[in-house]
Each structure stands twice: as structure tokens, then as C-alpha cells.
Length: 167
Image (cartoon, rainbow, N blue to C red):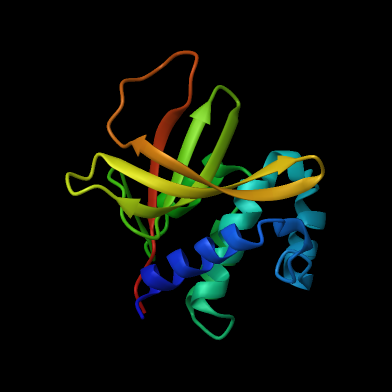
């Protein structure tokens, strides 16, 4: 199984029992330490926590990529994208690919998810995201996002994608 297939499989597994906040991975020691260090509330960072957990699960703690992922992920999706864009270990771009992080922005608010399907022409993609609802982090599937969109002043705009590195 490729790393992209593992990322998609893990992301989709959270759709079945989608209260991510009660998952063993969310309660893990490394994530609690990172949350304490940054001091960010889940309401602002749940998409970041979710995508980092999925990528780390896919790569595993014994991989060389684990340390890079830990260093590059940030509670802010925009900062995460910037960190990965400046890294020589991972690629970024503007077209969706399976397993990639998709980063969106609307003013100061941003979020990210994991691309789980892409249309043949590469313009539409589905992604799995985590959202805070009633003190639960719900994992949902968002259908048919456009990769190539005009800039909207009062709407979400695609920042870009971070592509997983095959090992």
C-alpha cells in the first residue's frame, strides 16, 4: 500500500466513528504536548490536529518523515502550508493529488483537510475535514471542491496543497 493510500484509508476510517476528540490518537501524549506548547484552542486548530494525526499514523513513528512532519505542522493551516512550502523534504502545489493536504483561507480564518478523491480532469476533489460541533470534533466528507477558482473577497479561497512523500 502506498503512503497516499494509507493516508486516505486512515482519514476515511474516522468517517465511521467520527468523534475524533475521543480517539486514542487525539488523546496521545505527543499531541497533548504540542497543544500545550502552542496554547491553541481546538476551535481554531482542529483541522490541523486531525490532518497531522492522520499523516503521522500513515508514516509511523519509526519513519524519518515523522520528525519532519512534527516540525512542519502548525495549528495554523496557513503557517503549516508555509512551513511545508519552505521544506526540501515535501512538495507543494496548486493541483489536488490523493492524500494531499488542502489548505483554504477566508480572511484570518483558515482550515485544511485531506484529499480523498480527484476528478479525471483534476479540477474537482473531495476531502475529509474535522470540524468542532457541540464540543465534539466531527470528521466529515466535503464533496466536489474546485481546484481552480476565481478569488472571492468574502469567501474561502484555496491556498494550495501539500503532497505526501512516498517512502
